[in-house]
Length: 291
Length: 322
Image 1 (cartoon, each protein chain N blue to C red):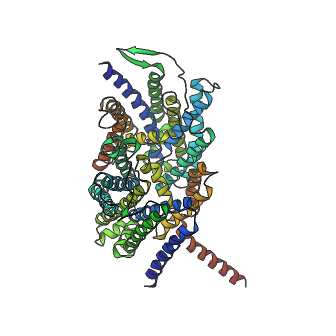
Image 2: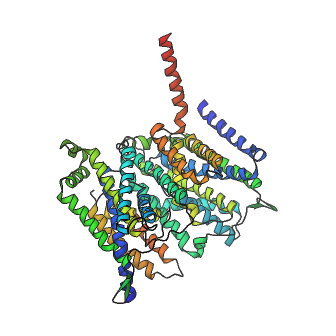
Image 3: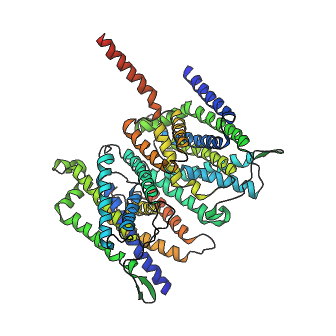
């Protein structure tokens, strides 16, 4: 029972983490029609900002996360201006340019702060609670409400504000939106800024829990891709549903798969990749994607 | 048919120059050229699939399938390299044949992502399953190829083995490129609905391109595994796939020579930067990739045509003045 609950807690944590990553990724795709493969690297930069500022005692934890989100949003907006806007007619070239960005960001971080050293970040909120026998450190627990608040905020922004509605209009039909006087340049920049800021925040929130290194974006990108595809490319609701499926699936496979056959953490990603492949082959538009 | 003859001459010169390398270069540099030959096979076979318009992110995983298959058969069953390597290629091709149907239901982005998911699942099987793949540490003690009592255990001898295999592979790939089949594959890329109306079986050609490309990737993987005597999961990860994509994009996919030019150019730069700037290498890859996409969208292969055009324009300008 305790083990089940422990895995359920892990599943909830992973779900919200995947949701924050995938929602940003899918928002960028929905509005701009480009797959930003450097999304994992934006997440990595967010984690590094927290390491540089909070772990070195410069800023308190929440401020460090905000600083990370701001810096990453600036990088994202820069990418939109430099790469995605000129390549709007050629989305595959936009994707290839984001591959170039992966290399640049990884090398920049690796050479500036070096790879070998483990970046240990002590938890900002110490202690833990016991819930029915399962142990939940506060640092992990706090991620859940923070992520839910972020996604709730985005939801409110997209549904209830004029800016958010223009974003959704541009996602639905860029030409019609442009005819209504919505600037496609502006919506692209907003989507990229928000999507990148979400990735940066996810990096900051996860920095004390995960191992911080220049290549941590790799796994984060794979998870965001799988969740986004299963949810349906461009669909925020789909990404949220799929992140719940993935979060709990990964947590339970990691917890229960027999070690002797295959390492459980690896098995979990194999299952995730196969699920994504099956969805792509059978129903490419995913759970909620438009046909 | 002078153009075709020119192509064979080009291949002949390329391999003649390569054959002289062991007498010119120090041994550690020779290793680089050897690996470059293997990557040329990978890049040229990758182009075959790319000409049909679909970019795969699973090509180096197919290479891994060839590497593991040939390695396991060599060590576990004592099979000689000359049999296990072609079988490795055939297993790669068989994998392609088995996965072509679901994969080609996808197009564009979806194909890219589907090939990535499938490739990552296979690669993680190499990492996760200790039996038979050796798990995270990889598969070790893959035997070195030999004929009778002669083993190809020096870089010098293995270089000529690689050169021979690469020459054979590129010859066949060039034949395919020049044949009607190769031309149909290129036509699919630019005009797929027109092709369909002319009765060209698009799915059939795409599947064929994928199977043939996978066969050669498998052979290249076997060459790599028997040289290294190991096969390990990181050798076939996305961080290895992305440079292949960069070579092919930087070189260009419209002609047979584009990917070769891409591998050759970037490998040479990499070799010059070795030592001091090695850790910056991926960043140069990124910058070169971005520069090519913006400044030279046709890749390096479009450079001669561009230069000719520029010179003609200049001549005309001068003519107008005079």
